[in-house]
Image (cartoon, rainbow, N blue to C red; front, side, top):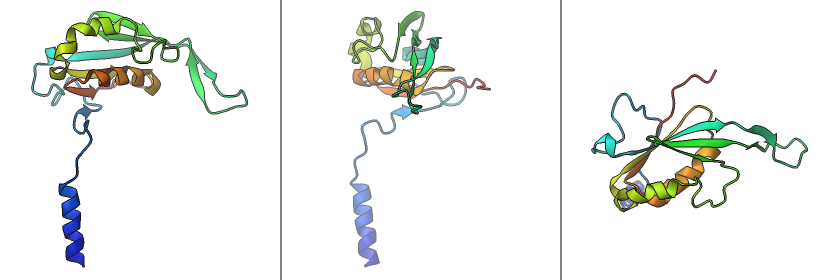
Amino acid sequence: MVDITFLLLIFFLSSTKFVQYEGKIDSALPKNRGVTSCYGTDCGDRLDFLLFVADPGELVDAGDGRGSARMEYRGRRIRVEIGARKFYFNPNQMKNPRFPVPGLDSFIEMFKKDMKYIPVSIDPRKGVTYGDVMPLFDYVTRLQPRGISFAGTFESYS
């Protein structure tokens, strides 16, 4: 009985297919030391999305007003930098969720035909939250780049 169990276990493990992004998404890798996330290409051919808080806005209760745990930022603006280009968006007031950052799609248009060869790095800086990053991550995922890596800041949060 134990032999049959091990044979079934080996069969199912060897026939498993993994998710499409398995091994393509790196996280929290420092850019200035160790192995980079360039996937064997020149790092100059990578698109780096740097996210900064341009205007923190005001943190308010987004629930029913009776002390719910749901809080959100009102008037918040995030700055996305790609090289010298800067784009601004409000993650809570997107007009079109498929294109969350106004003007970014027209800039990325020149890279779209080669996107399967270009790795992308998303680098949120101090103060950028999960809700700020996810609209941009969804947009970049639809572009189907060679790989997506996340890098974080090592600044002190005290």
